[in-house]
Image 1 (tube, rainbow, N blue to C red):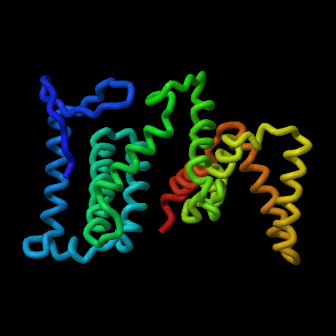
Image 2 (cartoon, rainbow, N blue to C red):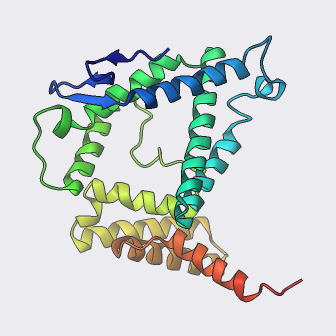
Image 3 (tube, rainbow, N blue to C red):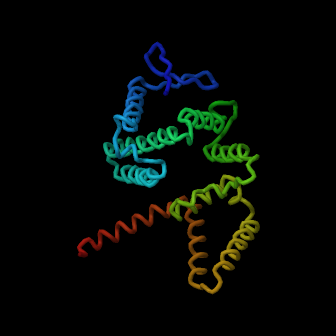
Length: 254
């Protein structure tokens, strides 16, 4: 259950360490409460929906991914009503998964919410603490330092290994370069960077012995992806645009 403190202005308040008040309009808190109550009802063993009762976090994994893509498509369309609808759908699936995981004793709903609240406070010391920062780049690099410090006692943690394998490859390699950049790896001297890239390429080539074509495209894709990252170009978006253009050109194909 989400508890909201009522202030003189009939708003829910959340206090941060700086003693400032962040307000949640009462209407928003009531709407969220209504959504949570609907999810409770859908999952009620006596009065609930047969389809919703059959769902697990596993069965909702793909729908969650689909909702994310639908949100992205709505944003690209610029249709505000569609954006609102798709964000609502994504919120519903997310909260439904949290509710199911709580019912199945996988997580505690309240603990999951508290975890992200505390994480956001820790990783925004320039908001909730006294840290001074001069740019968004500095904020991102500091975020990565804090994250690494949080994981220092985890022997299996790797700053690069936590990039999801399920991400589309072009997005994944962009995330890979982002991580390296935040760690300062991409700003090292050219000789060091080239040495690292040559070692990576040698490793890739060793795995692909006998496949000359694959070696050629592996090297080309890596160089192109790195160049696009430096130029702040999203290859995933570009490829989608190219595909859409070519589909339109061939719209009369039957």
